[in-house]
Length: 100
Image (cartoon, rainbow, N blue to C red; front, side):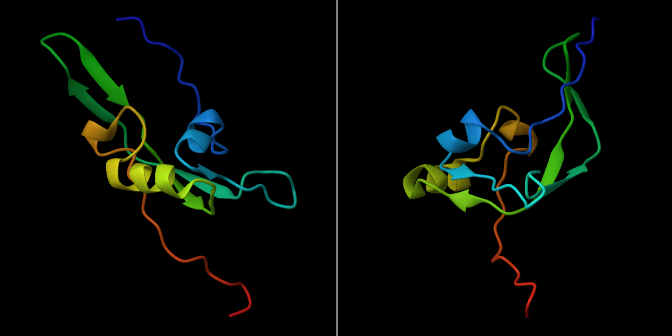
């Protein structure tokens, strides 16, 4: 089986994040305000010989909601193609203040 090279996920999102009603702000250094944490690779089978490989990534950081209706739909339904494998779920918490 020919394996395609893995492309690292774009933590800034882009078109996809805007479509889901949020954007990832950049830090003062110009980098996305998120920290990626790789998770264990998921391997499964779709049919007899066809393997499915998913490399999940967890992002911790900040986001800015730009479209409340689209963001609510993304929060309820998840995002991305690997939702059936437990990926694409959004978990929210209030932003922590560095002064508190």
